[in-house]
Length: 631
Image (cartoon, rainbow, N blue to C red; front, side):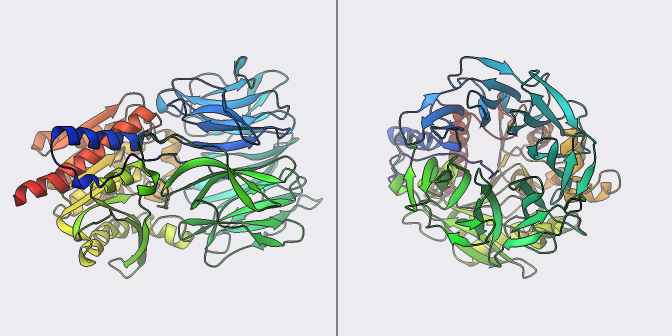
């Protein structure tokens, strides 16, 4: 259940690239090193086979994320898939004779689900047509549940593939976004999104269609869960009636009435980021988010006894799976200087053993930079924080690139970022803040940017830049700004609301016009976003006031715009509006369209190009031009 995302990457021979002379051979060497950063491999999403002998996982070992298998005790990996498009959602069937996975043509959401034998020879399609699909998991009887908008573009319904018929059928009609998080017999634990930042857990009977609300609440709250030893026990992560996420239990009586959540584990200084259950449901691995870094502990479900684990080799855990016998846990560990790789934790010895060594050809990992956590005040006194990556020998004040995360409910953490390390290796500092609206700091903080609150979140952009200048870190005229998805929106707000603040900006698949975003984004995406941004039917003026499109005449900052042609979350029209406007006005703008990508870059070759282009662009405007002007 633990969210697994992020990329394994590493770096080239990191001599201080900013010290390299400007002759053509050394410039070529610089590009080679930066390309090596983008080429760093990654491995993630481990899951033990039902007999515990193998671990299936996703890796970019072949150049594109594909499914592979490795002996559980370590050994040479064997490929399962070999598609030109990326593979995700790899899961073992209960019989151990098959695995399910999703293939995303062109990087989009119209995934195709397949069932294959472990050698990858016999493959059958599990879903039909071309629709948005979220991969799911198997029930213990071999049924496979997933989400699709095949019925209606505005809803991601739950479908169940039946091994007896080899067909998938509609199981639950959703109103918006939702899905099964666990399935036992005809009892389904279902999450349903009210709006972003607000969800509920339900117990659905697939025979009768009856639904029981397990998490009634006022205001906003989120919850996600799994069945315990049987369907009368639900173990969940929630923030009902509290600011931070906790681990809890709900008991369902014989009359079908659920109890209130009983707290099993909570921390005042951290949020429960996720949890993973052992196969016998007796133990849970808890993943705490402590100011962006992860801390791990085990809890015995019945006794409530908690046991903190030794610090992991890296700052972050992305995914985990208990071995069938409960004696080991396979993990994806990653951090600021460590791309995602597979590790195995032995519960008896409490030692971590590395299982994969993803390639990082041409990269000196010891030369990578770990960030420092810095705090500062917003314009209204609200405390904000961010991660500061400083090049070795950085002469402050100097060039700094501000990087804003997506979401907007995302969180900047000390994860491995090839683009950050490439910028740092080129002599530029990177500052990645968590402005209001970010997750990981409690639901009150995350709700501060909703609707009219977004004006204050946008002012946080200027507060961040002011902090860097006042702290003597960034130099006036040498600040850059970048971001993807919602972070791209932040970039466009910055260059329109604060046009004299930034010397260069990079907008990666960001939105510029909320009207066109709601009109042309995937219908379910628009439907769940009204609580975050505003409702186009009743709050059109607010959406227009928040849209940078109406202030592009203020832009004087050179921009780099990159977008995926198959993006259905933020359609490519958002990028086209920016590029067309700036070109007509004679403002410097570069535009790169990836024809084989959707929302973000999934293919290694495209990540390499993006890293190269970003670094070149910011070096030109924050380093080279400044050096030339001073000569």
